[in-house]
Image (cartoon, rainbow, N blue to C red; front, side, top):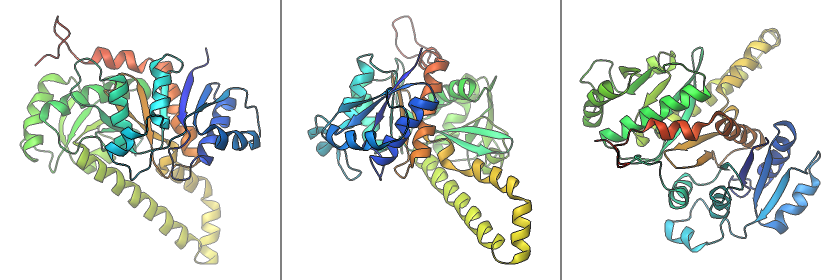
Length: 337
């Protein structure tokens, strides 16, 4: 059965061109139906101009677009914005997942409003996937919750373990708590309080980790608050970009280095691919009672394709059912304390 994915056509900074191009590519090469949500008049011509089979892409009209600068009150006044219209399609059962490259805060607001939270979840979180030695690591939260309580981090660890297990093929994921030292007792008050809870409740918990353990691939899931996680995300992307740009400049600086670059081209291509954020495309909002993926505002068509593919994998792997089962509830359906 072909999955159906909703794509917010008005999310990225360069909207709607990357979204329209990606929708056709995904429908054609990844075997899915795409509901492209945006202004019908603006999208029709762009879609018609795309090469390839467009029979599995359908435009759903939504006349209003959210801006990165919009505040909650301004967003709420736009009743027919692309996020709300698109999420309604998932809620009604017409699609199985929603993808946007728009404002993360707005995506979290409309997702919570439209779908609610998985029973027992206190707060949703944004789950990133980072390149590390010999593979990838799931990191959460990367920006949804600047302020956290210890029990938030325990739930992040539960949901991150499920995500790593299903989508990264990790059996018994190793979970670490990001801190400024490996030793127990290091970290701020949040980390000190969360550590004992995670040790008691998370089977794969290995203790505190620093950045060196994270990027050495010693854990499959790294847990932190959204403020720290967002800084980590943006710093990592910036350092990766600096390394690649500097390497390119040095390799093109002389005839000798150009010859060396030519000989080592396959290796450099592999490194570039590993460090390229567009290979991942989007991060899921875990804890929301539906599949919602949020990409970077700077997403190009390649990144949007990757984001949609992430959503497809989540649908086909049964991620939602596994997440719902990961949160322990009492006989009344309430979160266990």
